[in-house]
Length: 413
Image (tube, rainbow, N blue to C red; front, top):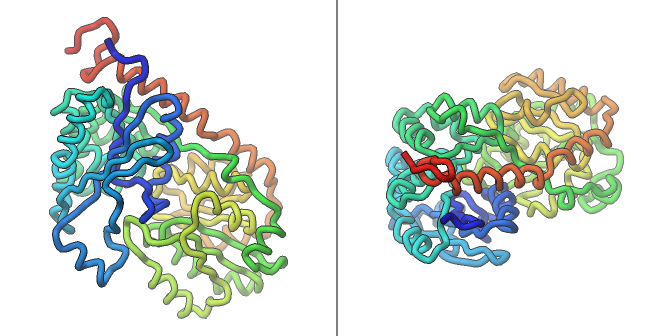
């Protein structure tokens, strides 16, 4: 008989640690809330090869060491190492992860702590989950979170993702755009569902603008833009910086707050700082570095406008976080952004790569009177509680149907 509370194995190579506190924080936010209702164990495999310690002498942020085992808020986190060489051989990461996790999964299952695999990202995690489910007989769920759109164009990786999605008991997408990507890759349309990310209104509760600016030593009469994310090319901080010279002519007191640090995709900070100096915008750009989620409400409360000139997002939680702090949003019409900024009173969507449209949208956004209370109310409609209720129903259903999707009382086919 199935347990009334299925034990989950959360499988994700992207999960926060002391070395990378914001990496995959959206997964932690979701699954630690699920843990209030169901028992979970996190398995967060970390890449390794013998010489990577030497590489860190030249690139300190490269694959930082993380604890192999720890307990956070009562939840056990395992980080087994898997062999991963940089470059083209990364296509083998799914298989390598599965081999590294297999002994641990067997122990967890034998001790009654593994009923359902909850896998995040289509590759390499999704393909690893597919292999582990096949070897263990466990049902599995894959959540698509954004990079699948980019990875699908690699033929080898695309084939592995498609195999994983076809075999999954259910596929969750954090945006409708990603759900469509999953279906095009082979996910069963009936079994592909939309469950977006949520917002923590207590954490993202705005403070008075004057107080926020005083904390950051920002003049009270400045016009302030803020952008938040890992300092990688995809996030598009450079696209905002290149708009500043023209905008400063209109708003001489303009200031851009850049919040973020090194990300899993790399470190673009040197290029951003060089561009700022080349354009002579040093006094108009302030790099605040990486900030804990609990502190983000300060720069968000200090700003007039949130800007994210990203190349692609599945569901950018930071947009909701900005809205929860009463900020209108200027962002690119890519991925799931139009599903978050879904009404004109919430912000403006611009075509990706159109610097003139971005510059004009920022200028108009600074001049416009926004109903900031309405923006906050919209964010409040997207709390985590609503998302978790949907997810719990789905997880119970997967467990009851079994690894082959049989309905309760039926024999698996």
